[in-house]
Amino acid sequence: MAWIERWRRWRGLAGSGLGRAWEQLLCGLANTRRRLLRRRMADYAVITLDHAISEHAPDVPWWYAYLPGVKLPLSLQYLRDALERIAGDPDIKGVVFLLKGPALTLAQAQSLALLFERFRARDRQLRAIGASAKQLIVHLEEAGAAAYVVACAADRVTMTPLTTWDVVGLRVAPTYWRETLARAGIEFEAIKVAPWKTAMDPLIRSDMSDAEREQTNWLLDSLCEDIVAAIAQGRKLPGEQVSALINRAPLTADAALAAGLVDHIVYEDQLAALLGTAQQPARLKPYASLRSLLLRRPRRRPSRRVGVLSLQGAIVVGESRNFPVPLPVFGQRLMGSNTVEQQIRAARKNPRLAAVVVYVDSGGGSALASDLIWRELRLLDQEKPVVVYMGDVAASGGYYIATPGRKIIAQRATLTGSIGVVLVKGVTAGLRDKIGANREVVRRGENAGLFTDDQPWTETQRRTLEESVFHIYNRFKQVVAEGRSLPYEELDAICNGRVWTGKQALDHGLVDELGDFQAALEWACRLAGLPTDSPPTETISPPRTRLLAEPAQAAVWGRRAWDAMAELASGLLQGDWPRLLGHDRFWLIAPGLPRLQ
Image (cartoon, rainbow, N blue to C red):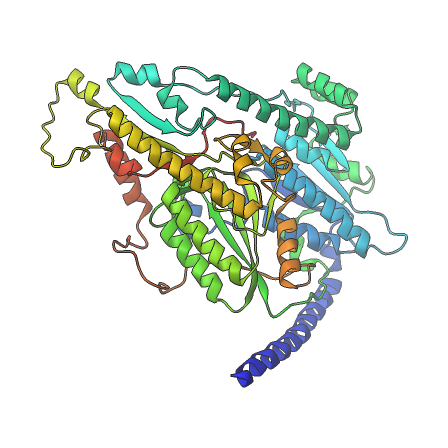
C-alpha cells in the first residue's frame, strides 16, 4: 500500500502548487481592479455593531433572517477577517467602529480587544517604513461596561453629546420561587454534591445560601477587576480613580470627557471632519462596500487544515436543535449528543483535517449526553490534536466535554468550572389536592414511580439516589484529573460545584491559557505542524450518512423546532417533569450567576 501513500503525497504537493499559482492569479486580477477603481476607496473603513455578536457565523436555516424581530448575529470570525484585510491595505488609514448598543458580553468584549491588538501587530508587520500607523476609533452611542471595555482598546474614543457613561458596576439578583411554588402545591426535590452547586437553588430555596453568596462575591470581584484593569490600561488612568468614577456613574458625556474617559464629543456625521479637516473631511465608507477593493495578498494554503467544531447550548440526549426564541431552562440552542457524535466521527474520517478546535459555549446539561460527547472527543484527540476554546460559559457539562483538549483556552471573563452534579424532580401532589384532581396509581416495583411527580422520595430512595449522584461526581473528578493532570485527591477544593472566571480557572489549573479563538487556532496549528499565519479552517458539520452503529432508539433527524416547542409547552402545562427532565443527573451551571452584558 506504499504506492497509495506516495500518490496522496504527490497529489497534495501538486495541489498545493496549483493552489498557490491560482491564488496569485486571483490576487493579481483583484489588485488590478483595485487600481482601476481607486477613486472609490476611502480613508477609513466603518464597521457597525448594533446587535448580537457570535463567535462564528451562525449555522441557521435561511428563513431565520425573515422572521419578525430576528436579526442574525455578526460574528467575531467576520470581524477578525475584516481587520486582517484592512491591516494589509496601504491606503486605508484606519477603522471606525460604530457601537450602537450591541448585545456584548464581557468575554466577547475581551475578544474584540485582543482583535484590536492583533490588528496593530499585523499593521506593524506590513506597514511601509515611514508610514503612519493605522488608527482604531470607537464611536459610542451607548456606553455600558462591555461596550466601553471595547472602546478602551481603541486609539480614540468618541461619544455623542447625550450619551451617558453607564459603567455602573455589577449586580446579581436571583429570584427564589420555593414559597411561590408551595402556594400552588408544587415542590421540587434536589440532590446535589455540595452547597456551591446552586443550579436548582431558585426552585428549592427561599433565599441565597452562604455558599452561593460567597461564590457570587468572588465572581463579581474577578469581573470587576477585569473591567477596572481594562479601563485603567486603555485610558491610562490609575485604578483607584477608575473605581471612583464607576461609583459616581452614570456620567454625562461632558463629565466623561473631563475625566479623560473619552477623547471627543461628536455626532456620527461629524466624524469625517474630526478624522480629516473641515475643508477636507476624511472619506468614510462601510467595510462591506470596500471589501472587494482592498489589496489582496497571496496566502499559504496548506493541503491540510484545521476543523472548527462549535458546541453551543444546553447539552441533551438526542439531536441538536436551534429555536428562534429562547426557551425556559433550555435556552435557544440544544446540543444533542447524537448530532455531536456524528460531527466528531466525521472529523475523524476527514483526511483534510490535521487538527480540530472545539468552541464550547455551554452551561452544561445531561450528564449522560456530556459523557457520550466526551468519549468521542477523546477518541478524536487520539488521532488529531484537539484544542478547546471556551466562550462566555463552559461550565459543568460544558467543562466536562472540554477536558479531552490538549490545550484549553479561555477568556478572562469566561465562566467555567461548576464541577458537580445535581438531580431534581418536581412534586405536584399538593397541586392536585388543591384543584381536586385525583390520580390513581397501579404499579409493580417499589421504585416504579421514582422519577414521577407523585410523591417526594422516601429516605431509602434518597440514599440510593445520593449514591448515584456521588458516583457520577467522582467520575467527573476522575475525568478532570486525567485530562488536566491534577491530583484526584486534591480536586474537591476547586470542584464541589464551584464556579470560576477564566482568570481564576487558570490559577487553579483548569485552563492552560487566557486568550481568544485565534490563540486556540494557533495552538492547533503548532500541535499539527501547520503554519500559524492565517491557517485555512473548515467547519465540521454532521455527515450526510450516519457513521457507525445507531442507538437502539434513534431520534428523528430534522425535527422541526416548532414541534419541539409544542412538546415542551405541553409538558410544562401537564406537569410532565419526568418527560422533560428525564431520569438524568445534570451537570448544569446556575442561571443567575454574573454574566455581564
